[in-house]
Image (cartoon, rainbow, N blue to C red; front, side):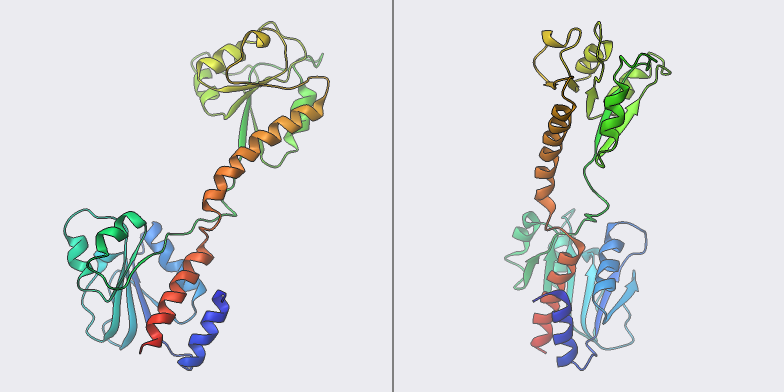
Length: 276
C-alpha cells in the first residue's frame, strides 16, 4: 500500500484524529530534516521542538533522536530514533521505550535483546538534488587556430551532467594542483600537442585522462581513456560510459528517498495504532 493509502486507512479508523507527536530539534541538522519530512507527509503529526508537549494525551510520542527522551505519562506508546551509541545512555533509554527505530542495522543489533519492537529505517536523501556530475578540467589557453579543440569543448558542454573547468592560462603554477584536484578527469581536446603538460601534471595528481593520441599520450597507458579525435561521437560515447559508472554507484541509494522514509514510519505507526 502506498503512503496516501496508509494515511486514509488510519484516518478512517480514528475518524481523522490519531494523536502522534514528534519531538525533534530545530537546529537545521539532519534530525530536524527527518522530523520535517515526516511532518510534510503524514498530516496528523504534531511537531514539538526539543521538548515533548505534556499537556495532552498522545497515542504515540516519537523522539528524533533518542537523546531527547523524557517521560510522557499521557502517551500510550513512546519510541525513539537511535542513530549511534556513544555511551550506556543508548541502552538505558531503549529500555524505557515501547519501540525503537535504528538508523542502521549495526546499532539495531545492539537493541535486539532489549527492545521487542526494534526496527531499522534509514534516512532519505533528496535524489532530485543530489545527482551525479562529472567535472572535466581543460588546462591552458585557447587559440584562434582552434588547435586546442575548442569545438569539442563546446560540444560536450551540452551534456547536462558535464561541468567544464578551464584555467584559460590565468592560473599561477601554485594554483594548478588545486585546479587538477578539483576535477574528476583531465580532458585534452587538442588536435595538436607537444605534451601536453596537463597530461603529465594531471597524472602526477592521480587523475585519469580523457585524450586522443596526441603528443605524449601514446606513451602512457594506466589511467588513460582514449577517443578518436576525428570521430567526435567516440568522445561522447566514452564520456557516457564513464558517467554510467556513476549511475551504477547511485543505484545503492535509489530506494533511500524521503518518501520511503515516511512510508516506513507510516507503516510502523499504523501497526502500533491498530493495537490501541
